[in-house]
Length: 297
Image (cartoon, rainbow, N blue to C red; front, top):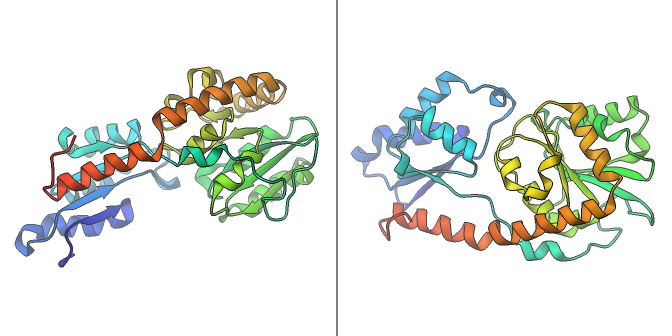
């Protein structure tokens, strides 16, 4: 870490570096450190590990700041990791909301083309167990035949998703084009957005869906319920309630004017609260404060 002005660490995988900074930072005159946490994998999706809580509590003791994107992680940092209030900074994820106003071409995705009359239920996610995408396939399968499910992303659960689609006889309507480097070039093809995750914090994919003007059906994990416009609230379902998620999808799929009204409200909120300019300014303030170039706001 010597030779730098500021050190940034991210998530549990970097906690050994944060611990080393806490133990040896003063002795070695190390630069200030800002740690970032943005969520948990499957092993902590349902329950935090006490040993890791203790390790974070000690290892982050000398960090200049700990940045989190969600209210839930802010609460964990304060209550489970016992970090002082002045050290924890919540900065919500932001995007270039204007980029999502453009309508993509029907052939914008590899290996799948949106044909006239089709409607697309879409999601963006790493294909990992914590995202529980086979659950989304099950919630989707009762939608009318003109609906297709398009899952953008890559990961180890691809085969499990395909197997569930085969089991439910909807494989012809479930598409996995793979990873998309720039979601703004494709997400506008969706007519409805969904999550099926076991755990989230402040998912950027939901912000992207909102900026595109989509209604969202999702479980109330992380900050999802608070992120969305009030008009979308009825379609945020209890975590783990697969039937409720399916009902929310069906209700939105069958009502195009409702989808449009909710989507417009979501777009207004995304532009007002989740644009990247505000996020960048907040990070600049935190990093500047750590470097002694101005206090935290």
